[in-house]
Image (tube, rainbow, N blue to C red):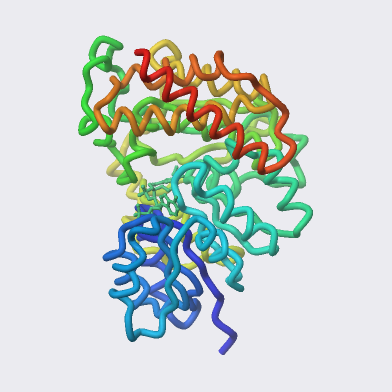
Length: 386
Ligand SMILES: NC(=O)c1ccc[n+]([C@@H]2O[C@H](COP(=O)([O-])OP(=O)(O)OC[C@H]3O[C@@H](n4cnc5c(N)ncnc54)[C@H](OP(=O)(O)O)[C@@H]3O)[C@@H](O)[C@H]2O)c1
């Protein structure tokens, strides 16, 4: 029997993390677990660590350390806490690392995994939005492998022939349109966090669910695709496809359009990244095209969703604009979930923050983290003045 592949899961207690744990747990002969990392949900983390016999369990929130230590006492599983411990966890010799922390908090640990040349399954799209150029350069320098986990980017990765990169006419990202597709701005002005996180097709964490409702998620994915596939912004289209059956498409110069299809279940793209370059079984509902009958598509409503324009402008502007957009969006989504601002305020705060901060070139990850903090403080002040 060949040696088992070492796996680390950054953000193991989240929606992507739990799905990854499920797939890893289903194949104990293929995988052994090095580290599991969360923010503060000790109960889930400790349970996962015991079940998977992890070597190390880490919480970012230091106040959760005593509870984690107690929960894993006598198991032989090492425990640690704090942001530095989270980044250190990515250094353990895991061949494969799932980057599924939410937001810019995932930047430092993902970079550490990249710098030791690991294969990284990237769900944490904010990493590329904040620091795409720097991250892609690090991947190249250290011979790391970046495998997209976002369903759209996984789809493109599966149908984009890199040898024909110059013969690609367009990448077409599909978007479900979220829970407010077809609604009015008047309707959206009074929606609650509960309405915003109730996604019609996907079960996801709170932040990405709100991002899907505002379509900032598609804006972030546009920026992610630009970096991952080295594709100019004008060659990346977005089409609304409410059923989320086609996960994205690549159009070639000869008129061929290649797509990847599947049930809207994140275990498929996670399994693709985990098994790559092979395929592993995933217990997902199989597609039944005859019962689906018709696939629907429509153009996105740019007026209803200014997020798409803001993301395109950020790409065209370059420099720190995308990192600022991301930070302001993270702050606004948290404020919306805490009922401090309305849903439409999210895009307002992002746009005012992009307009208000001094932009700069981002020459290092430290530059990115510093600009992230500047943008967060500015966005908080915008929120305070709303
Ligand atoms: N969910 C999806 O279907 C989906 C699809 C495509 C892409 N993504 C992307 O994948 C990422 C994760 O999404 P999700 O929906 O799985 O989010 P989620 O359910 O909110 O989970 C977030 C995970 O990150 C951990 N975390 C948060 N802050 C942290 C910190 N400072 N240090 C260490 N860990 C931290 C959380 O720990 P606690 O549980 O302790 O808080 C949790 O494990 C996001 O970037 C999202 O855009 C998600």
